[in-house]
Amino acid sequence: MKILTLNCGSSSIKFDVIETDLELIQQGADYSIVRGLVEKIGLPGSQIRYTYNGESYKDVVEILDHTEALKKIIDVLTGDSPHILESLEEIAGVGHRLVHGAEVFSKSILIDEEVEKQVDECSEFAPLHNPQNLKGVRIAKEFFPNVAHVGVFDTGFHHSMPPYAYIYPLPYYFYRKYKIRRYGFHGTSHRFVSFRVGQLIGIPREKLKIITVHLGNGCSICAIDHGKSVDTSMGITPLEGLMMGTRTGDLDPAVILHIMAKEDLSLHQADTMMNKHSGLYGVSGISNDLREIIEVMDNETEGVNRARLAFDMFCYRVKKYISAYMGVLGGADVVVFTGGIGENAWQVREVATHGLDFMGIRIDPVQNREILGREGDITAEGATVRTFVVPTNEELVIARDTVRCMEGVL
Ligand code: ADP
Image (cartoon, rainbow, N blue to C red):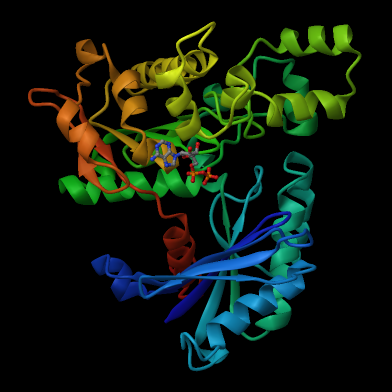
């Protein structure tokens, strides 16, 4: 059956149509038919881009709101050139990426009105994401009134963390009153790559200890003990943990109070500074895009090389977390790199694993440079921990969970 997956953000909708069912899942034979992105919704230069049958298409067209965006996606799916679907009736279910499920949702779920209400209540933890995700659900239900709609949460996979990993060392009162705690994100990605690496080495993840390192614009790392997330670096929001494209990651919280007082910043300004003006971008002063940072750092000869500093800090923090999670797990069997940076930036993989031989992690320098944007084993000979690159596929997880919910097997 064909499942449409939607990932609805404030000015974008990512979509994918995936052919899948329980048997195809079992065989790992399910596949994407078409995938794409509507971006700059309601902004100048709005456009839809998609890939079908290996060909890329782009249409720059005025798209004023999310309803128009979904209409445009449907036009693409049912259009003549390329001819993708016979009719919209072929879509058997819609899977939605939902960011924050707080303590309410531990797994994917059929979205009825009650669920919509509960997701809305979780918005206080993800005010920029959950309302947008819900908007996508409501619009999609208008276009697809007769099929199942399933919600797959970024936080879901991390429900297995023990309290000593998720409670913050604040007065306990705040946990009781406001549910302030670590929730973790990128759960669909950590879940996918840990499952996939188990397939690649022929040992199911239920028998492995795995550290998954997701490095994209947002970055997080997860300790997975026999298939269950036992700790992850992002917290109540996606700001904690590793250094990211524009986010700080870990930081002495007093720094923010100090800067707010010195610069007379509002809460909103402080939030913007930590989320949008920091990380690789804030330190380098160049870009949040690691490719640009690497290019500049290799060519900079004068003054302080802030691009190099940003790169070194980024890798150093990945190394610290890998080392910490080796301790959390009592040693790991596998380390997996994923996300735009994890899949492509061999330089990061090289520096972030350098010197970890003493705990069994050593990568092969030649293999590491060769495995770019594709699956592969980059373990050096003799290393006791295997290191892999596995491209993530969150859409596939969403589609699979949609099928499982529809079939009542989740
Ligand atoms: P998102 O978290 O938005 O899904 P991605 O997973 O696509 O982001 O990752 C985006 C990051 O990946 C950017 O910092 C980009 O520079 C980096 N990246 C992509 N390709 C490469 C590459 N070939 N070399 C280095 N970094 C890359």
